Image (cartoon, rainbow over all chains, first blue to last red; front, side):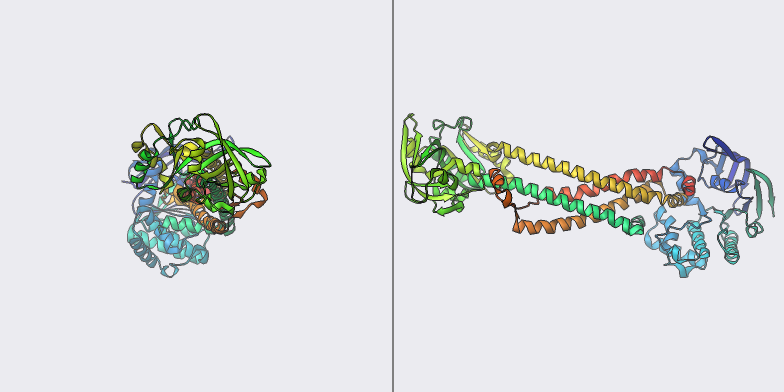
Length: 227
Length: 406
């Protein structure tokens, strides 16, 4: 069974009375262990699709199923729980909490799950060591480079053992070396931990690593190819 | 410290200047209300205590009907009956017999209508402060012709110590009797209207003047605790025969009690006004703080933080500001209070009007549990109320809308 599935998905934005169709008739299946890239030019709708898959936004029409369950019937609280327990998010701008240190940022999702301080600190440090950023533990976001912040963001995304990680342009703000390192890391997690990754990106370096490449243009899937 | 509290705490210090400005307004507001509240309480309780200590006492026991019609006919004919019972009550610290009558006081140079108070000098001194308020001469001694008058009466009658005064009053038969006195002492209380209308003579002389034998007009009673006045009134009513009436200071001074309640209500209004000023400051600050972090809230929602947790986080930030500001404001206000509680606030420039209120020219602020409760709890609570709207703003957004927010 697909971990994520969309069914005739539409998203229309209404801005000052003008309707803009961002996505139309999207039918997609994502399975556990996939390493999928949603590729397309700016404005093609890939981030919109990623947001709908991550239950961060609601479709205008159509359905998104997560683990076979229709997300449209879920309450705000239930969706929060799904995101917290089963999904991880990585953003283009890293979006770490600026007032927390790196390790506190990683601990944050565990705090939301009710872990005690000792357990969450232990697990956060373990994850950071796995990602090779244990030396950043006590640094605040403004004391880290973009690549370092994004690695911390990855640690935060995977710390609750999610089924799927959704990454929106994760390499866009990184230099090529940092971007490559980050992709290596995510590839490793995909292989070793069987975490499903879905990327929205137009970065060639990301696209070339995709096991499944979904090309989107003008809100429509124009190609869905498996490597 | 929980992580949520840690985030709230650190968020406050992201904009140090802004937080300090808001906190300063809370500090000033808290210190100001504490001062106003304590001075207001000091003012009214000083008024009350002056009345109690100068004449009223905690209780007065009269013959039924005396309070409505203060004539000598309504007197206590067997005071020993009451006295025996008062002696048995352990909360009664002191009591004293009194004979009161209206009359005319005359000197060679003038006359004035007056309330004559016949007192048992030794016992009266245990209850009221007249003895300590003698400013010239001495308190009533063994001479039956001793009289103590106020400086206001002395001035009006143009008499001084050892001056002769004649007191005239109607006896029980209706016949006007008179008695010659020599001024033994001159007193001055903090209540000018009391001073103008009361003089003190020995109780036996008053009884003789009025021709009432050993009868008296009232007992004045002092208890061990003014705060238990209602409880003690019930106890007194249980033991005192119902042909007598037990009046607490609340019954005797209803206007003053009303004034105290009114003062408390006026202070409540003051809290509302200052609270509203702080409320708008908090709403403004928290709205700014929320709007500049909308994207951050979007991220927090994305990673699974629930609306309730975001709401609590924003409320916590305002509450911390409120608590810190209130504690600092309370310390500032309390230090000022301590200074004035010892030295008093000298309002001699307004002494004439203050004395007519029965207060005295130096006001000593008073902080009781209620004042502390109001100062310490109302303002932090106000800050929480002020943060509700910004917190609701923070949680109403969709995560994607929040993250797109510019």
